[in-house]
Image (cartoon, rainbow, N blue to C red):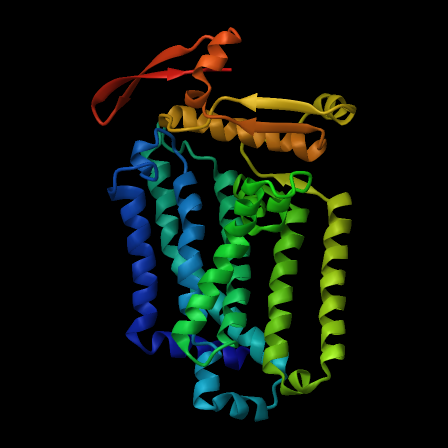
Length: 373
């Protein structure tokens, strides 16, 4: 396995393409976070954190990781070297895991230079060092689990075609769907009684990126990674492909049922580790007792949706994350964020009076009407 891993690293850095992919990733990240004016610019955020980085990086991964993995098996299949590789004293799993960890190591190498962002925020913070290290560490752990899952998807895609471009497109589409597709389906509300977004990676990544390490999220990422590695192994193993279709389907069903069972058990027996400096995502025992005993549905409407100044976006984010904690403890607690601009007349009729806020941004002062309810 280590020989395959070393071979993957040598192949990647033997051509300028490897350096170019990492350079483009860092360059685009740098432009969005430090140069381009907009919601992602850290200097305009008003807070000493890296939330913008951890928000946009997964979207870059959707394209970066398929670009790294697209040639992993597609080139071997196109050149016919896959058969030579199988003649070596290596099992299919050793070949697969060698390529998997090789690609994952490349992604880690691409992430290492971003640690300079942490140092920069530590120095720019007021006071100096005003950065929640625990939350930042949790966010990087979330990125590593996300990268591992995207890598397994990319390897699977590279076995579907001997054309690198086709493998890249399939990998990017699958990665996008697994990351955001289930959130989009949830917004359509086809199955309002089912939390479809929990099937997708976006929800679980958001949970870890807050700085909360939850065993349910870890098991989810490991399960999805294992499933796509299993599918990749089936595509690689000729004996498996020649197996009777019924037996192959049964094996796939067994793996799916096994992974679902593991996740079901983990949802009932889990541990959470709040790495944030002030443990803001840890509920007190009194709060847990009160929330756990709620038997009737509780509907909460929060009028904090829309285009807000950075300060109110921070309030929006913190409010949502706190409500997520309550919902995780008791599903009877439901919440919805609403854009107050679409409900102005209705809110005033209910007695919810708006407040005017002076917003100073880019040297300009403007008035914003908000409904702090």
